[in-house]
Amino acid sequence: MGMFISTVTGFFVVLMIAMAMFIHYLRVGLDSKSSVRIDSKPTEKF
Image (cartoon, rainbow, N blue to C red):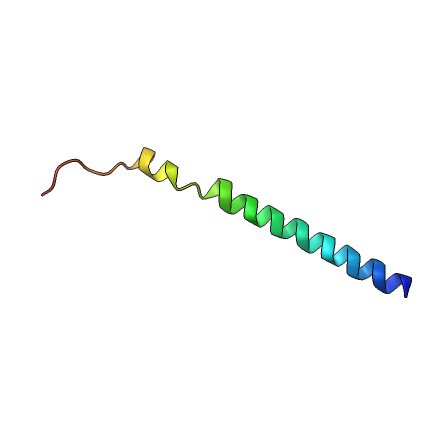
């Protein structure tokens, strides 16, 4: 029974670390403010 609990706990910890890294990537790597700085909205209408 101890082996089962440690396996489930270890898998849960690895899963939580992977989810935290994915959320961190989405928050930092896909920063929406940088799109305005790189390609700003044109001021003239055509």
